[in-house]
Length: 123
Image (cartoon, rainbow, N blue to C red):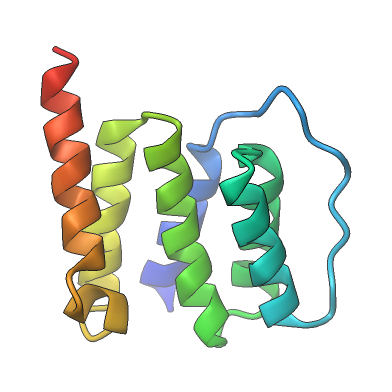
């Protein structure tokens, strides 16, 4: 559990603010909050997405949606072009959840590699 809290704290503090965010409305259901966070992620409203994902990890820490929310926070950093932070978050996710389906199917490693490649293209 301590490593999960570190992941969440690290990711939440490294997500930059968005210029457009309406107030978020939380549900008492982890899945609904997760779906709202994903919707905001697709809209590129990083602040709202981060709010939903952070809420899930703090209120539903043992839910499968807490792990998905951690990954969502990493995806926010990726979406913002914060390549080094995204790489660190993806590595930490792999270390914290080595048997998660999205680690096993290669998604997290692919995103890690993509962030690595993009970080080197900008220098």
